[in-house]
Amino acid sequence: MDLIQIGLNGPQVLAVGVGAWAWGDTFSWGYGMSYGKEDVRGAFKASLAEGLTFFDTAEIYGFGRSESLLGEFIAETQSEVVVASKCFPYPWRWRASSLKGALSRSLKRLGIPQIHLYQMHLPIPPVKIENWMDAMADAVEAGLIRQVGVSNYSPQQTEQAYRALERRGLHLATNQIKYNLLVRSPEGNGLLQLCKDLNVTVIAYSPIAQGLLTGKYSQQNPLPPPRRVNRATLARIQPLIDELRRIGVEHGTKTPVQVAVNWCVAKGTLPIPGAKNALQAKENAGALGWDFTDSEIARLDEISSSLKKESLA
Image (cartoon, rainbow, N blue to C red; front, side, top):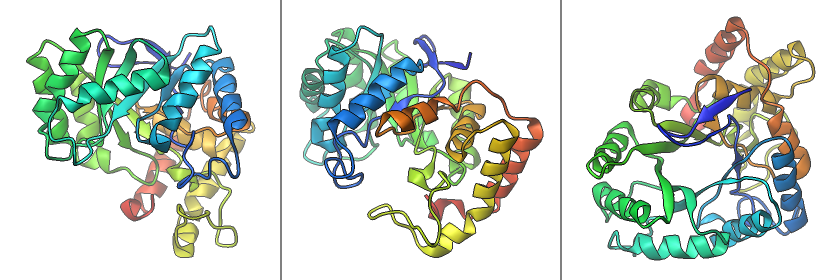
């Protein structure tokens, strides 16, 4: 089976997780308009049925609604669920001690006594990285979280967080970053290699580039706002979409989504594609259970490298 370990000493989970950003988010994803609570409940149940047990949320997703929905669904199941959430460093959070209150509110919304993986959402001031990590370590010692992660941290910032936790006798478990076939800067700037060297698991968010890699969109059928990109971009990525489709055919009936997500798995990361309904959840799970050939990986790498990656997703 395709398993990945969270951090140095965390649990093993299937190598595709579930991103819950769209659960409760109206502005970016249209929650309450094109889909609703029963749809995301279906995504939760279908994910568990497929063996996907790692769910990633955050206090800022839907301004707490994502955590509340996930908590409600967890209360309805007997299945084991690994919960990851995040603390957002709002500019009015002047002290690292504010993490305690944020964590307490997240725990209440989730309805659980302990969050398995708690992550700092962004590395922005005014609070220093070292101070946030000390607050995280305090929460571990209090039994409120099990593992500490970060998100959107550069190589230097990742090492800062790692060393700060090391001084407290803890290991940085994860760094959650944007990584997909259109955004491969973590390879070039050394972040993937650093995380591998430090046994820090890379969680890849936006593995299908917020829909660009699904194959559903074209110049004639662009993405809806606010995720819309210009038509020239949709035309430019078409060779990559064509290759995703070709590889999918070679492996039976795999979709571009499944090929794109499996590419992230093949790179040693834990991708967390979103799922707004049961059908999407089942499709995400289909990224597991099969392997690329070396030539397929090389071809995808070649095509994606030829695109202007950072401006696309």
